[in-house]
Length: 318
Figure 1 (cartoon, rainbow, N blue to C red):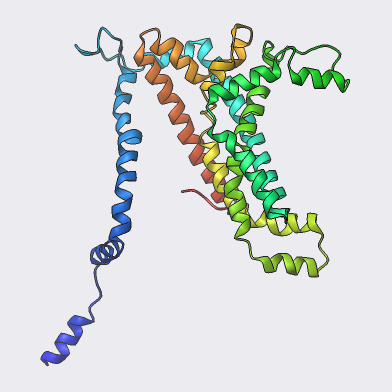
Figure 2: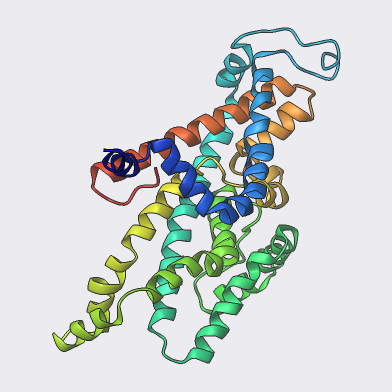
């Protein structure tokens, strides 16, 4: 009887808590390696959320030490009535959409072109040349762009020689060109870096699929449509969801450095608005309210894109 009882005891299934503990203990070194990353995220991403309470206070330099008065939704009411805030919102959304469309399209096209190249040396050279601008400071990039697009610069010279324009175009002084200049500069700077993940995804596609497509008579373009693009579909959807969540992050440096009085109505973004009408004017509560609004809109866009992808039975982020 004692032997049967001991066997029943030994065969009793483990509880979910013990299973989780055993799994964590088996991966204790991986858990230990993740601690610095976890601390970094908690310190720089979650701890600052405590400062959101100042969005509901009349916070400035004179009230930091003695305590700011609570004003409820006063800062948000001021934001929503301010025309320059909505101007920054419009410009931020427009430039983010341009960066999203052109950045994603160019990175996918570059990855496909490099995937079709058989010469390894040429492929590596092109990869290196295209992703090196990612490491350049935005100050250097904007300086190069200003030299390129200045009235007597090489861009106007080439366009005039080709007969596309009759007179030099004032690229840096007309607002209708500003959004597109920002998009061009961002694509040039980030296209190589953004294509790396697509290239690695294409490298993981089963080569037998290409061989089977060739046997069936598919040409190179048909293999791209029927093998390559479906192979990177899940990666594309996940990255697209993440990028949609960052639509309120059009940037700050390039707009601040490239902008001037002539293009102010097109270069003003939410980040510049926070700097000029919040921090420089000693209205920290309004600045925090604007940043909080931008973050909440980004979260809504992220969950909305994830929900749409889930309803379409695609890969999701959450």
